Image 1: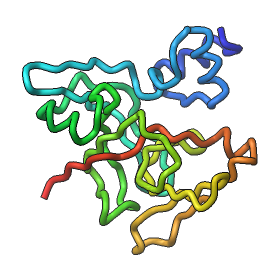
Image 2: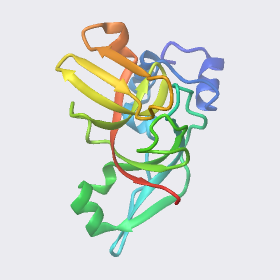
Image 3: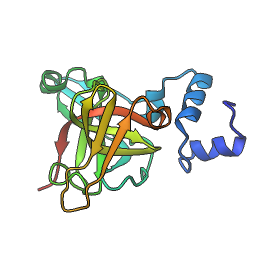
Length: 191
């Protein structure tokens, strides 16, 4: 199936192994699903009365030096928001997901344990904070677009050695290891 051995497929399905981008594309093709449905999980989207419930995924996105996503999968939990406010602020609630930040490289903007809402429909090349996949790792980072063909991935915390990564979209090897998942549009934190 998709050029994978049975043991490799079992490891991926059990979230003990992260598939390469090429393997993920092959699996999606064989299963007839979209890559986003596997990466973000096919979400249960509900609205009741004047409340919209955004899926709270059981995924930690690294705000450190690129540590792997600690857990993968989807939680049955949802966060409720007034649906009118959510639509005015961010558009279609079906494009929204909430994940938790791990690490402090994005401090003071985002801290360890903060929740961030990402909009999967917003992947346009505009400077901002994004959840992204880079070298098989999910991260939340500031993304800058200095030119149409280059992307700078950086952190906000200046208490640490600066972590920058320049992505050259004309370099196939680098491009294949990079994907914007969605733009961070909201953050929630304990005070």
